[in-house]
Length: 292
Ligand code: DGL
Image (tube, rainbow, N blue to C red; front, top):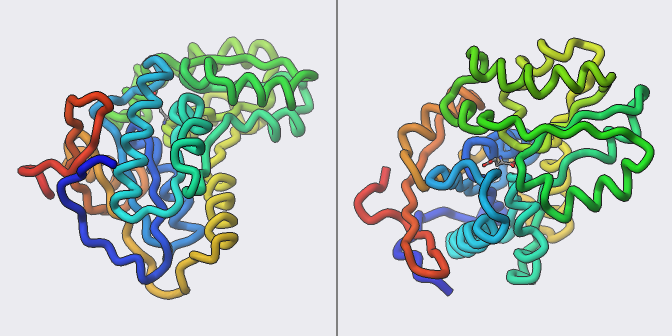
């Protein structure tokens, strides 16, 4: 296994550590739900902001990043991993389960099943990244659960970058969403599935565009409930007590992630810088001179 140079002291005496990762701040939408549902569980979160967005990248590359991140989280004591990224789940979830058979994983797939069950108009919109639409998970979920439903897809090109820059309401963000949602509205959607963990942060704008009659499905809570079920199943749920503050890492600027976290989830979180090396396979470690 890789040498990760150093580790942040983190007590797991209050329950096993859940490792959570995403390409960027999207994972905070999942982390936030996890904290609401299991506030005492220690958590580590990695935002691979040096490589965001994952969506336009080849699946093989995203898989390589996902393996290295998982390896790092395990080296820091994580016993369960939540892949808080639809794109990384599409590219790597099955592979991660094979590579780390002793680790339970919770992954993401667009919530097409509940949408297909609940739609009355029979037309459902799905917003996700190109890689998510290309992956086998999405194809399989549409084949299994949505054969009777008309699905309209859009990759919302540039939206992840807008959210990473903290622009949740501006002109450019609005235009990306209008371009994606107007054709769906014209086709009669009554449900929109958020197939990217960044998108919950623009729900107010999405809802403003689609109106109250269209249901927006944010999977964050369902994913957090699934993680809680796993933690209970393995008997590693933290005891009740004081809620824990997750420790976060970024492969880019800790200051930027810290201020975005305040804006997006209203919390001040400690953030440490991680560095990618350039070996093949790639390895993550704590940056020697950039601890914060
Ligand atoms: N938040 C991610 C997802 O759920 C990744 C978006 C991206 O990096 O392109 O797909």
